[in-house]
Length: 91
Image 1 (cartoon, helix red, strand yellow):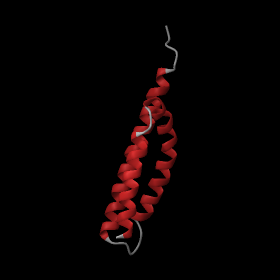
Image 2 (tube, one colour; image 1 turned 45 degrees about the vertical axis):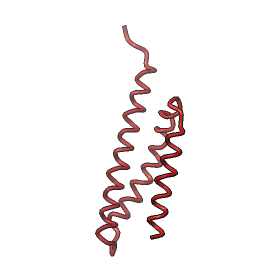
Image 3 (cartoon, one colour; image 1 turned 60 degrees about the horizontal axis):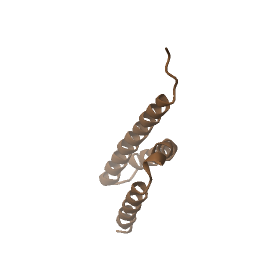
Image 4 (cartoon, rainbow, N blue to C red; image 1 turned 180 degrees about the vertical axis):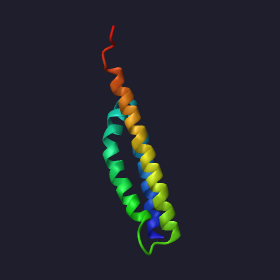
């Protein structure tokens, strides 16, 4: 029960923090959050492969890996697109 309360609070706080970020800061912060998501992927892989864990813990670990990888790939795509805007056009 305690873990569920922590999870719900983390979701709520994360949502509140992300919605308060102005759009001009979003892209630079997203590129920095890729490192944090990488740490989340490692933790999720450990949870997904833990011996003696329930099937639900394995399932949540798998979902965490998928969502963190989507966040990482999306972050790199947005960062790449932002960097493309600053390149000089040839011609």
